Length: 270
Image (cartoon, rainbow, N blue to C red; front, side):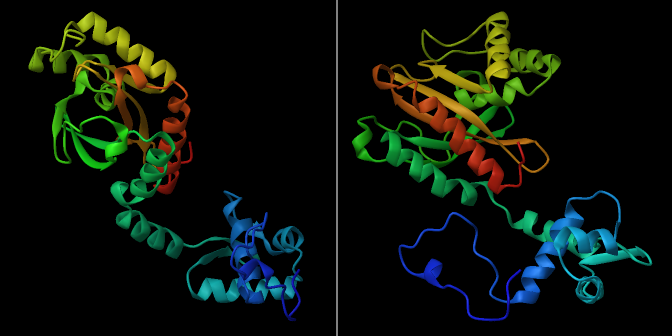
């Protein structure tokens, strides 16, 4: 446990690297965080004795800090000598969740993926029977013309991200989609028959990723992974597009990892 003296400040110097997360500079905050972590690890109220043992804090010290946290409604005391997380944390969490924006969370990771692959990276969401492109990271170095700008739309069954959303629908909804749209094709590679689409969606479910093999645009192939929120709901898809002959299968893991990183920023725990 940290004493009240000066701390080693080398981790604050430019270029310094540390293998452990930085600690609070105020000792009482460090102790409060430790108390909250212990309560977060237990579904049921925790006794003061157990809290003291788990944190290494003297019971009187833990009791004093817990009392202040109770005053602030960050901790609740359902019975004398026992504690649990308070409702104020839920209120604050809901405020944070309301401010989370998938585009804001995705933009930085998308740019990093583009720097690694030098290919266009797209963020898309579902609207009805189509996907809508809401963000893109690309440059002229990709050697590929960007056909659909931000705000552009495309049918679900012809795109990698669209297939992700269809794969999360039940079979009845997929059949209803096929009936409504007629599964119209854009290229000779387009999936235009329901049995073939159902087989494709089964593959998507099995592997957690989807592909577009020149089904929307000839000469363009895509790979995509889903982005999920804290409730495990598919809210968007991240896709990488490339000229058909240059799509590198090694990029698939990078797409998957980047999508998982964005999901984590939205509160998804995997």
